[in-house]
Image (cartoon, rainbow, N blue to C red; front, side, top):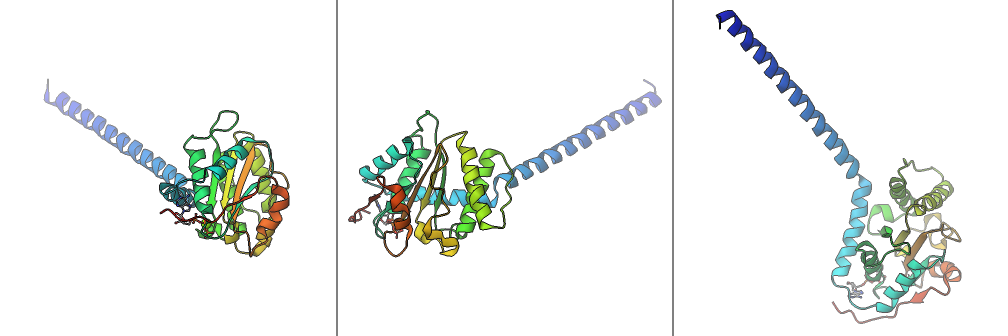
Length: 246
Ligand SMILES: Nc1ncnc2c1ncn2[C@@H]1O[C@H](COP(=O)(O)OP(=O)(O)OP(=O)(O)O)[C@@H](O)[C@H]1O
Ligand SMILES: [Mg+2]
């Protein structure tokens, strides 16, 4: 091989290697950017909000015992066709949050399945435990955001509260077409009173088809139970006091 041809081949080889390196660099950078975008999309504020409630629920279940009667009532309710939310009420400390956590666990770990054999899609909020769940407007915004993701739609919160309520019902209806939806709202009494939160008029008289909702509240001091009682008979049941076994 003559010297000129050798130099030519080396320079061609170098060119080739440079191109491979550049190509490799640009592809890897692009993949990293894409992964970053996906991650930031996944770990939004909404995701961390949802995870906080699941985490709280899991903690309660670790020490949970008994309460077979109310758990069985919840199981039956989730399978029936009632369009009225089930209200679990009881004095402070009697175990409402723990029962809600157990219901969450039963639904999410596949112990309970919906009548069509599919798993439930559960939306849970332990109210008053995060800033997003202390105010009714923010709570509905957060639930609508989650429902929008489930329905594959973008979500922009309306300014007016009544439009937000309409969107909430609308999104529940849409989500219910795909899967049986279970909404668990623990401690309605923990909401701030704005938007007449305790009057419960922000809930429709009848939940959309395939949507079930379980709420909990203390019985006195707030009109929540009174507002729900008429709708909830015969499902409503009180939790007795009980000696804590922790
Ligand atoms: N079934 C249960 N098994 C074991 N521990 C329980 C059970 N129910 C409640 N507890 C314990 O009792 C305490 C109070 O329960 P919990 O917070 O669920 O009551 P609550 O009715 O939600 O109270 P509040 O009205 O103040 O929110 C917690 O420490 C909880 O872990
Ligand atoms: Mg509680």
